[in-house]
Amino acid sequence: MSMPGPDHDRGEREAHEWEVQERGRRQAADADAAWNAPAVTGIVRGASSGIDAAASPSIAADAVAADAYRRIAQALRRPPPVDLPPDFAVRMARMAETLAQAPAPTAVPAAAADPLLERVLLRALVAAFVLGAVVVGFVYGARVFTQLQAAIGAQGVQWVALLAGCLGLSWSLGRLRALAGHDSRHRRPA
Image 1 (cartoon, rainbow, N blue to C red):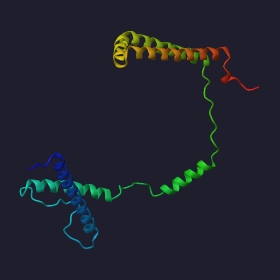
Image 2: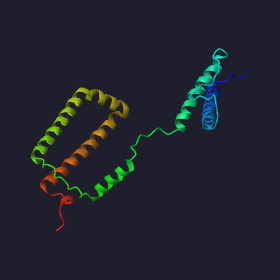
Image 3: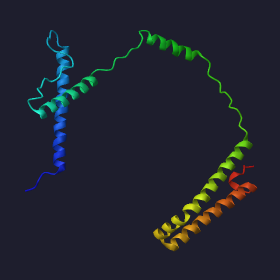
Image 4: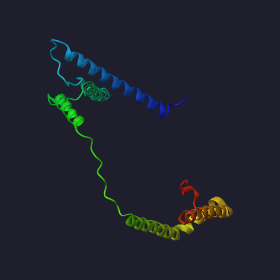
């Protein structure tokens, strides 16, 4: 004999919750229909389901949940009140005409930044990052190196170092060529 598992209980709870939601939705639809019906007496907007809580606690809890879902469904059925002024459309049309007749705005030139100051600040920032990287390397480098060596082996670390050296050398030689003006990628055609 097998006992129902937690998935079975969860499915029952979800089915029960869905039933309560549907009951609340139906109550909201019935209340809207009754409210809009002519010559209906004794119906009060927002009235609860009228279930006695002493009769059964689970039925009372379901009624409270259904009442909450009914209020949500009623709120979703009615659009929120919009307090627009009566001449809103006229004012918007007038504003659109004014904007259409106005001359196009001209671009305001931005204040020219000092390129020398920007270069100095950029170099100071790069130096600060390099100094930070060196400090972090000294503080955590031994631990990281040991973990890297344990993960990929001593020969793997040598290959990673060789790859990093090749990339660094290639990049630095490319920068030197560009600074000297021998870089063919940045030449203008004659």
